[in-house]
Amino acid sequence: MKKIVITLCVAFVVMSAFVSRHPVKSGIYGSIDPPEMAKKIWAISRTDSVSAVPLNGKFSIEVKPGTWKLIVEAVPPYKNTAVENVLVQEGQSADVGVIKLTE
Image (cartoon, rainbow, N blue to C red; front, top):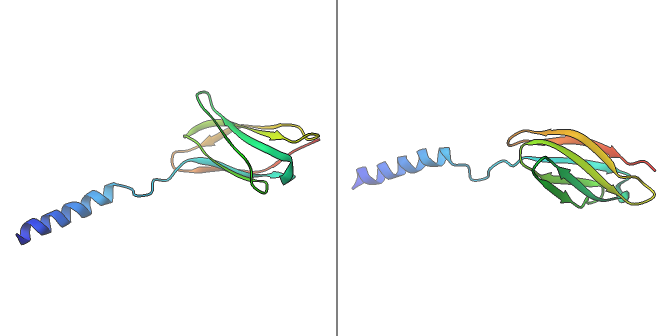
């Protein structure tokens, strides 16, 4: 009986080493200047699109690994702004820094 319990415990420890409880997600994050002039942030790839509403000028969007284009939907008189070729690696987040909106 002891051998069975020990065997099960060892098997559980080995299996849990291969299974992640909190998988690391890929994403894009940054901020907008001026913060109150951004309505929405779009991340667009060849096969997918995701949007988020910035909070206090900051945003974070969970995306699949790949190359993305960001579009900041601005409040007039500011103009929409794009950031091209944002590369997101598996399990990592890309920091695009501060995106400055222009009038």
